[in-house]
Length: 248
Image (cartoon, rainbow, N blue to C red; front, top):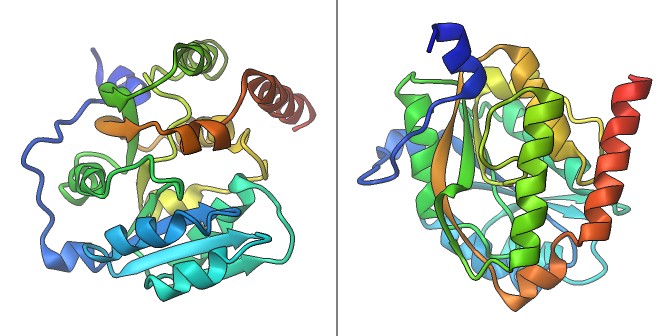
């Protein structure tokens, strides 16, 4: 494989024995978008802040106590007055982290699916200078209690990404990612809702920055499955993404 082909396809990293020094951890900003997650966000934030002091929760117009729960758990909370969608929340968090001087920006879900341990695995190759962007992959790592119907939707998303975006990755819609300051500065999410994941892949490709996939573990629960995207939602996401490509 040539250097250009390797950059386009990404490279895989191992999660075994990964350790980040304290000075690196202090330069990591973890971005957590949240909408009506008062019952879960406190535990999620509480686990993350034990290792990373810069945790930013974007309360995306929640109607419950998400903001106060996240703040009590130790997060800096930014609020959208109305619900704009996960894409918009992520961009708000990325912009804030960059203004605060973040060297590494990590995106992390608020529903308890992600493991704090995997953050180090994502940031490590960036800190080592191997690449600028890490994409978490449940299909290179491990996935707990993934329903067959959801697996089919996710695999369909991978195939779509390979055919349309021409990016050879194994997990197209994983919310666990890490960016260097340089890479995060190139991200400009314009699709407010879930179609942002495909838009992000396009922007990563167009940035021509080196990236890689990192095996991570995703935990599915009844709660996260209920909150997740249905097959009908996947069709809506596809429509919004294609409409954006057609209209520019």
